[in-house]
Length: 119
Image 1 (cartoon, rainbow, N blue to C red):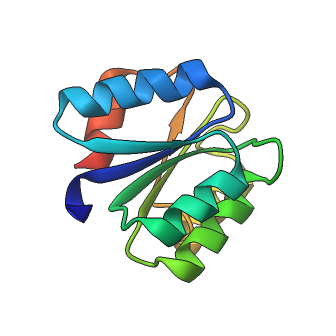
Image 2: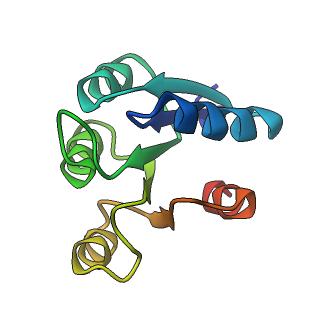
């Protein structure tokens, strides 16, 4: 069921595990991608309601990936998770304004921030 399927994209397996563990505890199913190409392949195969994207991936910038995902699957709610950017960075504010990302969470994050973002 697509409304409970969440994509987690981060090049750090431990970060994926932490997000997936939290989401599973709330009844969500997840798929994991460690790079942008894996994420794009998964969005071709599955209908996700939401995606948590790292801002810096080895093969593509997270903001570029967000645009590509939305071009193919505009229903996905994209939440950027980053230790590189901050919410008030110009590029993040512009991405939110243009609708490429729906929310932004700084690393390290609190569990409540993830749960609020996915509501």
